[in-house]
Amino acid sequence: MSKIRAARVAKGLTLRQVADMSGLDPSSVSRIERGLLGTRPDSARRLGAVLGIDAADIVLMERNGAAEAVEEKSA
Image (cartoon, rainbow, N blue to C red; front, side):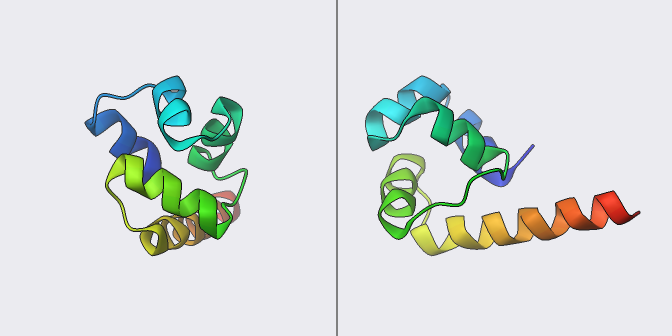
């Protein structure tokens, strides 16, 4: 489970709720959680505000998640 998804689940929010609260599309939130879509700075700020995470931390989580995915594939 990604750290972004873990933050959402810990707050008891659905993808739809996070999307509605952040103004993002539900499919975008899902793709961000799965590491399939990076966030623009404004999207990271809005998503971070909803999840209680700093926007910079969201970007770091995405980068770390991408690195972890590459490591898992090569193992």
